[in-house]
Image 1 (cartoon, rainbow, N blue to C red):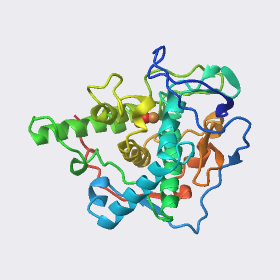
Image 2 (tube, rainbow, N blue to C red):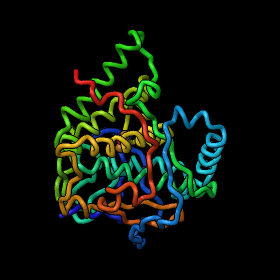
Image 3 (cartoon, protein in one colour):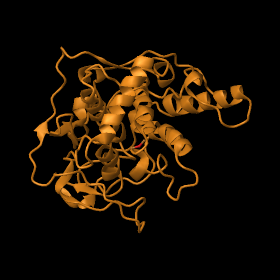
Length: 314
Ligand code: C2O
C-alpha cells in the first residue's frame, strides 16, 4: 500500500537525531481535522517558471531585487502563517525529524529521506515554496535559482589544492553517483518504502548521497548538530537549502536523459504516496508522487547547462 501522508491528528516534538534529548517544535499550524484539497496542476496558460543557475541569475539585478523582496515578505509574514519562512523551514523538520507518523500506521514514524521518496518529496516542497514566493510579489514567472555545483563555474573552491585537481575530483564523484553507480532506479532513487514499513534510516540512493556533500559542506562545522544545513531539522532555515535542492531536482531530470534503464518507478505504491503541503493560498493540499514526475506539467523548466562530468570516468 502507498503511504497516505502524515496523520493530521498526531504531531510530536522533533529531535535533531533519533533519541536525542533536545526537543523542537516543528508541527505546522491548524492541521487537525482540516480538510485537504487534491493537488491541481498549474493551468497551461500560466507562464513557465524557468530556473536559472544562481551564478548567472545573480548578475541580473532586477531578478536579484525580486528574489530579495519575495524573501523579505515571506520572512515578514506572521509566524503562524503557513506561508511564512518560519513555517516553511519547519516543513523539512516535521517530515524528517520524527514529528509525523504515517496516517494509516500511527505507531510508525514518517521519514522522507533514505528511500525512493527523497526526490519527489523535495520536488513538491520546492514547488510550493517557489509559488508562495512568486505570489508574495505577484510574479507568476518567479522561479528559484539553482546552485550549479556540478559545474566549475557554480562551484566555489575553498581548499588549497590546485583548482583543476579539485574540479576533476568533483566531476569524477558526480560521474560515479550519476552514471557508473546509478544505472538502475533503485541505485539512484534509494530503497522502496511503503505504508507499514518502519521509517528508513540510512543509506539512500546515489542522488541523495551526492546531495549530502553540499549539506555537510554548507552546514555549520562548529555547531552542535551541524546547524543549519548539516541537520535535517534546521536545514530549511538556510535559504541556500532551496537553491541547493533545485540542483538536486535538476539532476533528476538529467539522470533520465543519460539512457539505459534510467526511468522513474511505475510502482503503484510509489505513484500514489501522498504528502500534505500548504500552498500560496494557505490551502492544505494533498499531493501525490505521480503529480510531480513530469516537470513540464508543473510549469517548470531548467535553463540548459553543459554537463562537464558526463565523461569523467575516474
Ligand atoms: Cu531533505 Cu537536502 O534534505
